[in-house]
Amino acid sequence: MHDIKLPIHYTFLEETTSTNDVVLQMGREGAQHFSCVCANSQTAGRGRRGKEWSTYSKSSLACSFLIRAPESIGELLPLVTSLAVCETVQEYVPCSIKWPNDILSGDEKLAGILVESASQDGERFYVVGVGMNINNPQDTSHIIGTNFERILGHTVERSEVLSKLVFHLQKVLSELVDDGWSELKERYTSYCSTIGQTVTWYGAKEVTGVATAIVENGVLQLETESGLIEIRSGEIISQGNERE
Image 1 (cartoon, helix red, strand yellow):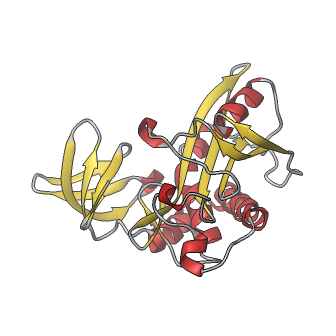
Image 2 (cartoon, helix red, strand yellow; image 1 turned 180 degrees about the vertical axis):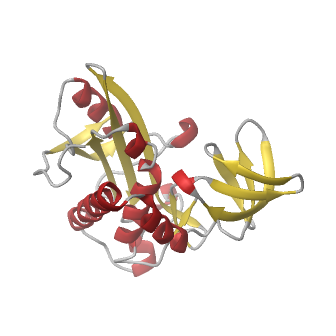
């Protein structure tokens, strides 16, 4: 894997369709590992399962990172990134992780992550997109989920949050490379509010059961009426009393 702690090349855009789209193109053109693109606003931001992710000018943090790593690292990027985002948010407000990679404050969404992959000259690379709700948008009717300002009662500098995010993301990636997933899994599980909850999972079909553990490679174990199953992909569409 490329050196985790290379100097970061930042690109700041006033507006773009999606920072992930920009970084995917940069990756195909040979941009360096851990290049980062941030946008003041996105016109076509997206989340998992094709959902729209709205980014409001001067209120949200929308950024994407180029990660050049082997597949063994790449398959864990959604979980280790969610850990990094959670530990960033924890510096401001209490939060939890909804498996696999939504960040919640209480039952409301505060941040989301989208990991995509592509190839350049036969070498696979990954794009890690992070969207955080930082401050209230001008039109407060646009608030979806919650944000730092709403919780704290004051605005927060997005550049400060970005700096902390870079620190935590580099840290967890270094730990993953040096020490493997085991210790990170324990940290991830300690933040994961899904464990112990009755959840409904959407994959090939909807399945309801109790989430019992996070195991190797970030797989979620679910105890159902038919027995124990392991979830490797898909999405938790309801957790406890909450439903998306």
